[in-house]
Length: 336
Ligand code: FES
Ligand code: CO
Image 1 (tube, rainbow, N blue to C red):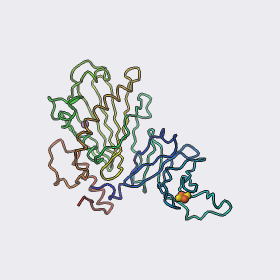
Image 2 (spheres, rainbow, N blue to C red):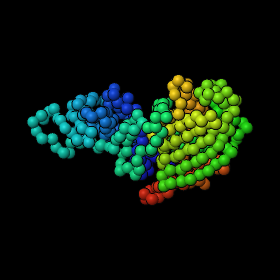
Image 3 (cartoon, rainbow, N blue to C red):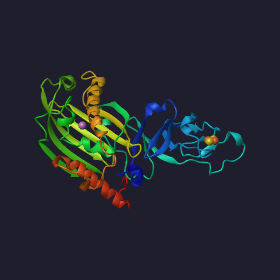
Image 4 (tube, rainbow, N blue to C red):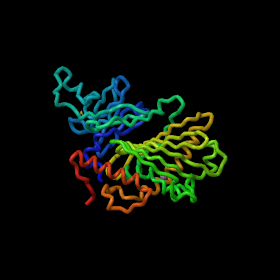
């Protein structure tokens, strides 16, 4: 599937830029092959429009924000968060033509990021109730491009067979090449996967988990929110809950922006945020090294690759995406 060619993917929300970065001025981002510019309007809300001025096509993201509007760096035309041109310095006293405008996109703040939907949203931004729960704290982890398809990352997170071979320096256990259990349930837009997996507890992690044993067990409830957000709720025997939320925002067909934060039911006094990030960093780099070797044109047709029992989540994801395309009258686009 080539993500930029499947128009229905424009109808989902994706986190694109940390709100904190927008405090420094306008930021450009490429979403599904479309260049957009984001900034904060006068009320502090994020706004997103096409990063191309309707006058002579200059990039608005190279301009500046004045009173909540974005000013083009070429001739100073000013646009509001709806994409309407609200000031032309060369024609101060004339009305502005309504054709002076750029495309504006749905934009909202959630979990510390500006989220964008390029077309009519089919679904809300994924709900992560723990973020607002005072028992939990939010830790921002990673924001970086990976050279692979988002779907490869999604199925990797639900793949209970890879830790033994990929996470050899972090938590993978040779004694547990397969999980103890796998349970699935689906809704129209989500896949829920419950699994129990024995893992090792290396010295780097012992402090983070407050567990001295060399081995432990992860009881996992993973949720896939179509198409590119995953929530991994990992519970340990001592009551610690570590939730990883990860979106692979599609930049173009071969690159995804990894946006990851975690939510935990412990405190900074228990475990420093930087130690949690350091361990998760090591884990994600193990995944990245493998995932960037895979084909980005992931086939939704399951006959195009070979499978085993632990691939069931990935197979369900492909089936649900194929059904989504069909429902919206689209044919899967592939590299030729
Ligand atoms: Fe933007 Fe001229 S190109 S104002
Ligand atoms: Co992994």
